[in-house]
Length: 136
Image 1 (cartoon, helix red, strand yellow):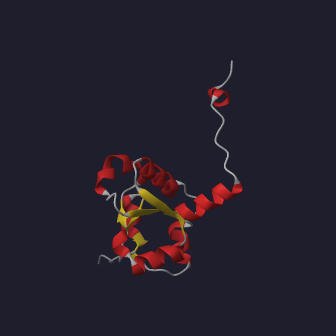
Image 2 (cartoon, rainbow, N blue to C red):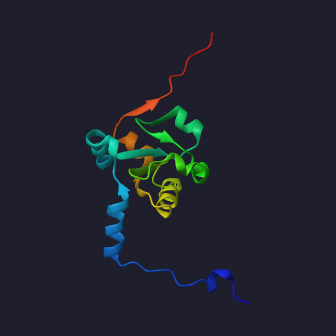
Image 3 (cartoon, rainbow, N blue to C red):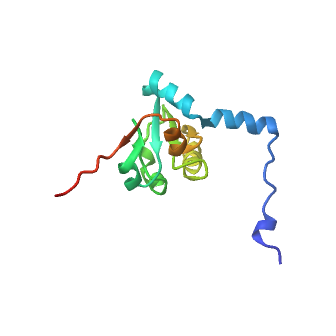
């Protein structure tokens, strides 16, 4: 008996050129995103796909939050005429690419932020942080 994995069709194999072209088209670097936010902020939506508590604690300035697990139910909240740039925790977190893939499947123009919030902060780019107040 063959497993379902073995009976699946062969995946499409990309050439190095195809992969690298796609990578450049669909991954935003911190610097390219910062330039877009500075020069043409009305042409994009910056989408933080982490959970709401993490977003409330800190997020990239100007971002909106729709957690990746809620995206399919809230996709209508996003404008189709703008570039949607997704981000999550860091380069090891798959939430931002998953969200970008889901949005692309629904016809959105997308990119995801390479390195996520961790790389953004490492480069000392602007974030909004919740100010903790001490209770007396």
